[in-house]
Structure formats: structure tokens, C-alpha cells
Amino acid sequence: MSTSTPIKNQISGIFIPVSDIEVGRAWYCELLGMEPSMDIIAGHLCCIPLSADGQNIVLDSKVYSPDSVFRTPMFHFDTDDIEQAFAYMKEKEIKLTTAIENGHWFSFQDPDGNHLMICKVN
Image (cartoon, rainbow, N blue to C red; front, side, top):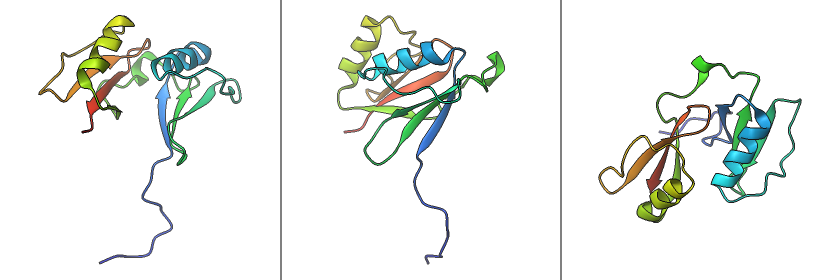
């Protein structure tokens, strides 16, 4: 049974606390192979587009504290080739927190200690 609701079944922003907005923007853009040309909004926010559908990572330095970092991955980045993604992260000297698990995923940390994940989608 479907009910009417004003809430859409989509997510357009995932907030990630960062200690320095410019450093965070550069790190995430390099990770995703993007130019760090996104505006910094109000001195503490940066929206990094993930899709043409309006999905964004929203970096926020105003909410950062050592206690605010993600201790468990709150989302994952997709990949078609988990081994290639793992090798890329090692080449970039990004802190890996797991090996490739079940041939399907691995976890890592950003410079602020947020735990993130990359997962094979096919």
C-alpha cells in the first residue's frame, strides 16, 4: 500500500565533518578525480557533486570536533573494480582500515579520521 507523503525517497546531501574546509575539499576532490573548484559557502561548507541527480557530499568545518568524526562508515563510494580501487588508495597512501573483505568492500579513513568505505557494485 502506498501513501502520499511530501517526503521524497532520495538523499541529496551527506554531511561529513572536516577540520579544515579547504583541505577537506582538496582531499575529497583528489580522491574522486575532480578539480577542487566548488565554492566554499559561508566560510565552512562545500558541496561536492556526486551525480547529475543532485546528490552531494557536504563538507562542513563548522560542526567538526574530534568527537564528531564518523567512527563507522555512514555510506560507501561505489566501484566496478575493488582490487583497482584498493590499489589506488594504497598508491595515494590513504589510511586503509581493512583489507578487501569478502572480495566486495574495504574501509579507509579521511585525514580527519572519518571512516568511509568503498564497495564493489557489480
